Length: 85
Image (tube, rainbow, N blue to C red):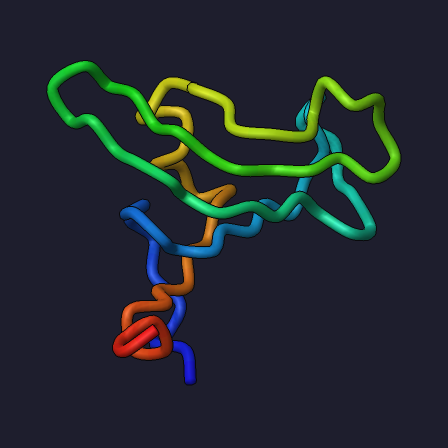
């Protein structure tokens, strides 16, 4: 039910990054949900949970939007499956 993989973050998209927080390659990558995007302030809010990390990684976090517009990230839009929920 997902749309094709895209490279632009937008609300409710599932993202995947095939590297760890230090920029190294990760076997599992990093995945989360885009909760909000503010173009004017260059901000993105994501929901994430770090199973192998401490609880500081679990919740909603604000980051620089430009950091999430790199080729490291892929986005799958969920619009089609959220309709009617």
